[in-house]
Image (cartoon, rainbow, N blue to C red; front, side, top):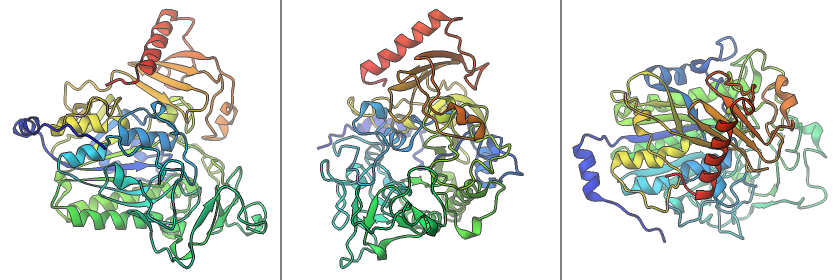
Length: 513
């Protein structure tokens, strides 16, 4: 059972001191790189992102905004728990039938916001598992525990990620539109010898696979894992973005009289990249560019709805990404071929799966008309910090054993003059090989215990980095070398040793808050 610590006196003092109690919407893109938006350097000839660019123009654009890991599940875990994912168990990329990764008794960001009187919802990609440990999701029954057991009042989900089965929606604790006469089965082995797959029926695919992603076929696309049944519940890939916007508007409309927290978890730009037909060929970068345009439309629709309901000035929007970019991530969708001169990771090296800056430094924008002044900030902020930041702003005292790495950077997110941002940040990959990045000020330590890089291709030029051998430790000055090309270990041996000691202490201490 969760034990909440809540100080009404402190909450009252915070409000008396002038702290506002905003609605909060976190829009988290998927696999969006630092350079993938117009406001972060993308050229209009490649793609246009007017709605997100307007958030940046009228809000605060961060140049040192981070997610905590370079893959989706660990970043989402850290975002909701306020604790680095490497401190938890089974926090790597969740398989199709993973049980709930966040234990039910964990104090979470939505728990904290409910204490402060908020209604809470998550709409979109989940990928944090459903069901009890040892059992996993019981697809034809109640899917408990799930989001509602860890602080959310409502959820409308893509339960895993769309390159993993099954392709169904989950509303609260049930698969939507599931026919009991056509039960859903999900497994890791072929259910029958003649079950069609991306290998046996490759000639029927409307989007081919390049590696993995060749099991069950749905909507002309083969996925990771196997499933049968549930035909009435299955969705079309092309309709995901529209559904996220529809359900978000519907939920906001029902809860607008209360302060609310919405986690809008987009599936764009994750593979398979299948935009709605109206967004096809709207960029010069084929499917990958088209889903960025689709994502931008989603942002525009949410802002438009807030304006319509008179909620815009009462709502803080944070736009971010769960990790950096990747080109070929398992499907032949022309991502590499049509990349051209577009720099998905901006000036940074690496991308998804790596501890290079391109893996975790992503677009990060805060927008709150009338409260956040337009500008650009170089303060270090991270998606792991929402719990600590919002708790202090709302006057909620976090339990000592919760949100172990979530710091208060609210002043930075609001753009206050004397804000300091994060003093340090640990960056992780997917937990394979015990690889970490550690940033402190302008200095960046790379720790590759595997002595190999992990990132996949961001573009054709970076293909040589995949699996490249690297030293266990390397030191970089990000102010002069943002691409992490010049290892300064030999030039600054004392700095290297200090950074190694500090990182190891943060790892060993089990917390940084």
